[in-house]
Every structure is written in C-alpha cells, then in structure tokens.
Length: 199
Image (cartoon, rainbow, N blue to C red; front, side, top):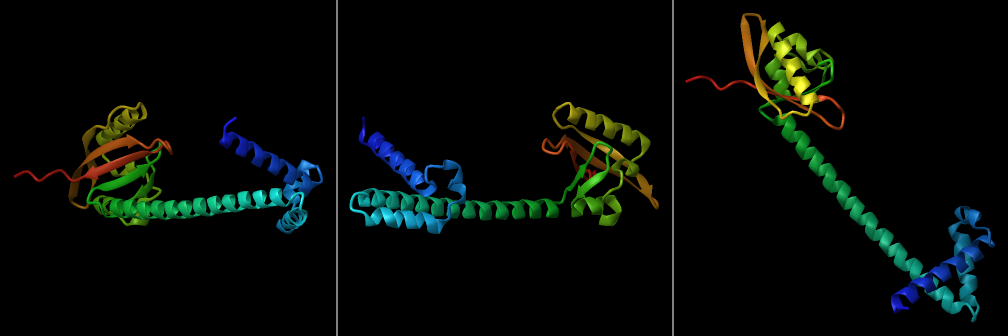
C-alpha cells in the first residue's frame, strides 16, 4: 500500500473514531453536534497521552480543511464578482447598441427591449413592453415575421428580411429584421436595423 493510501486510510479511521466520539456511536446525531461539543471532544482526546497523537492529526486535518474552505470561498467570491462585472458590461453593450434588440414571446408580445428598439419603434418604453410586436407591422410583414419565427423555432439559421411598419403620422418605415430562438427561455430575439441609405 502506498504512503498516500495509508495516510488517507489513517485519516478516514480518525474521522470515523471522531464521529463515534462526537455522536456516542449514533451517526444520525452528527448534524446536531455543535462546534463547542466537537472542540470539547478534541480537547479531551488531546489531554490523554494515549489519544493525543490522534487528536493532533485530526486537528491538523481540520485546519487543512478550513484553509481549503476559505480558499474555495475566496475563489467563489472572485468568480461571482467577475460574473457580475461581465453581466453589467454585456447589459450595457446591449442597452447602448445602435441596433434594436427585442425579446418577444410566442405570441410576439414584447418582453424586453433596448433603447434603440424604443427609438426605432417610435414609442415610449412603457408603450412597447407588453404590446404585440406584430401590431406595429403591416399584414404582409406580420406574415413574414411569423415565417421567420417558424424557421427559428425549427432551428434554422437566422435569416434577415425587410419588415414594413404601419405608418406613424405621415412616416412609413422599413427595417431589416433578424430572428433567432432564445434556447433558455423559448422566446425569440429580434434584431432590427434601419437599412443603409441608398446613395
């Protein structure tokens, strides 16, 4: 048997003996054992010449375990901070993007929209959220949108097409639209861009 295996076996034996001491042989009570009770048993083991070596080995194992837990906690704290910074950066990029980003559900109700989307649709933010995106489109473009959503639902590569919007006042608008399915929520992501002005 290797030294590593022997050490692991020895520590496992110590853990079993400590568990027995802490619980009086009843393992189901281990969860109710307080830290002070555990320390009292460890002190008792350390006070006896016959078990002092075991107590020191167990104490060392506990200290190593505590250091590992502290290091894992620190890594998790850093990971969380990194993820929060990344999320804030991505949110800022989407919110400030020149393209309109919308998230719509199966019935085309707008669930999320960025600033460019509000601007391109020519409505206040609260006037877009909860509304049907299809209600902004002509009948022909609504049919085109439904076709794009069906393709996205089937997993096809995103296609771009022109959507014609209902006139607002005397202004008729045409926007380029790309649709894709959001896997996590089952909703759809739409990207809208004004077509390049012809020279």
